[in-house]
Every structure is written in structure tokens, then in C-alpha cells.
Image 1 (cartoon, rainbow, N blue to C red):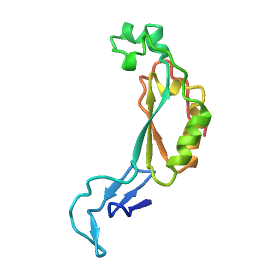
Image 2: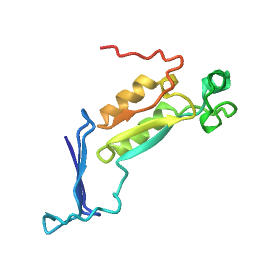
Image 3: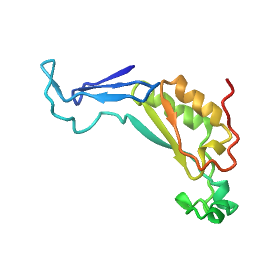
Length: 144
């Protein structure tokens, strides 16, 4: 269980990286929970990291054939996927403050050439990675 104390906004959070259980106190004054919900956190607990710059399914028309609308203009916009060094920099800046990375961008994250490293880097920095995928052409599997 990870514990985060936001000294600026005076509340405590607990997060279990194995179950996803999350709890937050009210504002703490004189060592007691006031029951007043904190307005904000001094650093996000979850950050959306756009690692994908391209969508192979959108570009080859697979989504359109399946009747799925392209996200972030994935059927016509092509950018570089996030580099591993940029992702490492983000993970280093977020370590100890962020509980989760919502990995996303233009296209399915499971198609990123460095997916396994991205997942490992997240975990190495104490951050739970999560992402949603269409499952189209998914080849990544658990190698335990």
C-alpha cells in the first residue's frame, strides 16, 4: 500500500498497486480528519501519457471497416511515437507522486515498439501502467 501525504492541501491518500484500491482522507487539521473534501492535489495521482503518435489501424482503414470512428484523427495524422528516453524522463519526474499512468495517444498502445520497456519502466518507478486497446492485431503476451 502506497501512502501519499499532500502537505500543501493537507490530506492523505492510500493506493494499493495490486488491487487498485484507493482511499483519500478529508482535510487534516490538528491531526484529525475534518471530513472536508480536499479541492485538489499538489501533483496529479494519475497522468495521461500520450505515447502513440500514429494509428496503424486507422491509416490502413481497419477501424473504418469495423465501423469504429478514429480517435485523434488516426486515419490521417501521423506523428512519431514517444521515444523511450522521453518516457523515462516523465517516469522519473513522476516517481513517488503519481500512482498510475493512463497510456494512450493516437492508436493502440500495444502497438508501440517499446511497450514492454514502457510497462517495466512504469513499474520500476512505482507507477501502475494502464491502457485500453481495440485488441486489433494484438501480439503482446505475458511471458511469465
